[in-house]
Image 1 (cartoon, one colour):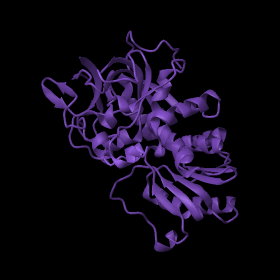
Image 2: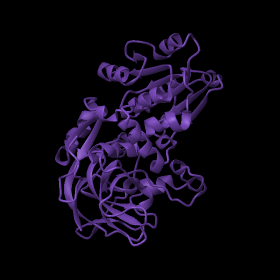
Image 3: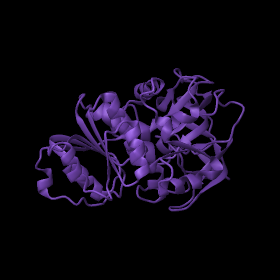
Image 4: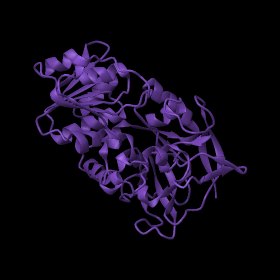
Length: 378
């Protein structure tokens, strides 16, 4: 069928809204009419060539939510009409997938970034030419997405679908890093560098975990103010203060027991590592240039702190996304406060507002069709 999609035709270019043809679902695939898709910094990293994909043009988007309109013959857990959120792709057959750790799939790069199905076939075409898609197994900057059953999470019908897409990546990454990976005990201290969507999700999760000291570091006063409203106990403006010294002062000289670095900026990554206490844990989440050197010296690592890059919050989407939805129902995870909506025709405005810091979490709404949600607009 023909669908509408936002295409990226070259690095650093604007998205263009075009018509492309999408395959019918294979036996293990689900066709989803997309209502809305979160715009993530990973989309921008690909647009800017920081994280290269094999070829252009490409359909990005990897935080989709919508309604199932068709299923393949072998699909058994998802039905037509189901409300679903879409998450990252994993192969399902490698040892990490077999151990229930899909974010560490041995085939993660191929499954999420190569623009093809796992067998190398192309899902999207235009005028007889192949269009790279299957981004994170979904390419949801489009009116419809073709997704393997494995990557589709059924969600309750009474939650506005337009809100739920970001749970599939950015928000899941921040919250999951706290709740699934670091698992700080109640009463512990956490420092979070970067108060964007990922960092603020970590702030909310740290409050859920019962952390006594939650320190947010950013350079935008409005984001720091929001961090305090969402659960941070301290806010540090990195332009006005030495963040490492301030964290040490707040923690009586010890440093934070747990550190989340969500900017990907090498200088800030180094600050995060230096701000950890002895035998602390540092989780790196931000995506910067892959070859960027870190401004560290050997002595910075002689604290015994464990430093690890965390992917997708070490989450299993089928269990963690419903968990986050339940926290939201309880009023403990108000992630909707991060979101600003944009129509698909204004996707480039959403990009610019993200880059300027005006918007924390843009969500791109697709054009309404007859099969979409019966829920109210948020």
